[in-house]
Length: 184
Image (cartoon, rainbow, N blue to C red):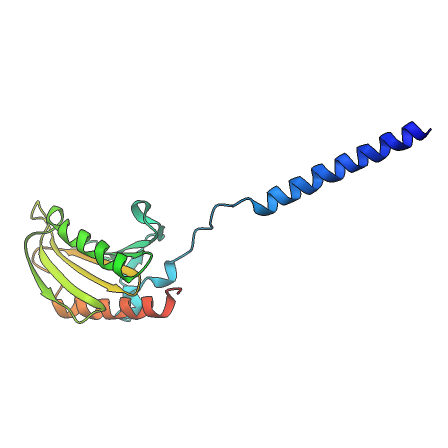
């Protein structure tokens, strides 16, 4: 009988040890970080211009594998589109570097371009021209706000390009949305 009690005691001790080790390993294991929903950072053109002319696709989280959000707004007449991309980086310096890289690559999207400063965020710049095939007028607004890098592309008929004032107005609303919603 003493052997049975001793066996039960050893079995209980072993079970308790295995449970404790399992609980400790589980508590210490790292879990994949949850993807943050950044859709609150997007400015909706319908809110900016008090209209219902634009419809939105569902926002894309982490566009091109980069932390952030993107949405595409299409005008009801199907001739104009706004693609709004907000990348959330580690710090303002990384946001600035990302924006410079994006601007350097605009030659694939905008030809016959000219750049001008825009009073939007930090380093606000509007690059305007046409699509490589000439079928669209394209204006791209680039700026940073804190650790966010924003790229807003306006595409439309070559005969109806987005004006700098329109691009700036939308950009200022976009900048305000980032300031309001970007986590520290």
